[in-house]
Amino acid sequence: MVGKNDVIRLSSMKKHRNFLKIVLLLFSLIISKNIYGADPEFPEEQTSTSEGSFLEITNAEVGIFFRPEFNLNLYYSWDIAVIGMLELNDRLVLRSGIALGQSWANAIVSAHASAKYRLPFFDHFPLSLKTAYIYNGLPAYKTHVHTIIPLAVFTWRHFEASLGCRFRFLYFAGNHALSEHIFAGKVTVNIYKTDDVLIGIRAANFDDFAASNIDFAAVTLFNRFRISDFVSISNEMKLELTGYIFDFSFMVYGLSYRAGVIFKW
Image (cartoon, rainbow, N blue to C red):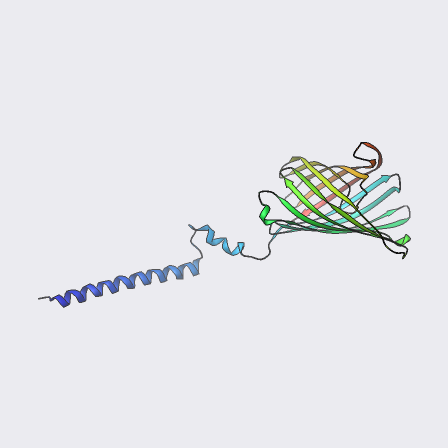
């Protein structure tokens, strides 16, 4: 005959067994997750490690360009340039390049470096801050020009506008530096844009290797065609204007064409 104490003892043993089963089940789940990875039903757990990485290269490319130019000052000049770009975390863009060329019998050396950062609290209003540095030198005349351009960049769909101020410092034959600061602006419109083709127009008073005066601007037609996953072809036709641009009393100063090959990985 089973007494009351025996019934209580059997019920407590069943409770302990159920508790041990739950503990073993949880332990096995933890072990299996550590061995086989996160449960595929919860993809957010799988992506948490990549999102937590400090730096991630999201885009990188390097291009080689050749540019002949005709203008009223230098008549004919040319240069060969190498430009690289590195994008980190889909937010920070670093660009740098160097151009070596010749005008008349004089060598021309140009270089630039820039950093553009898309502000995280402006995701719905894409605003970026950019700082660019440009160097131009004529070694034969001991002339060196250093330019710093801080900019605010607004991007919306196929439109981009950059506004800022250009600070230029000119050193000539060891004399004291001459400095000036004027408005710097650039407007770019992508007329046609797909994954393989880009066609657009740009108006600006500065570019990668030159920073011009406020009464000097250039209108550029550009395109880029992707011929493979890693190689693209780039073309630019630039019309340089001088005079009073804003009241349309200007004249054509020069014409240049730049072609290049861009490698992306």
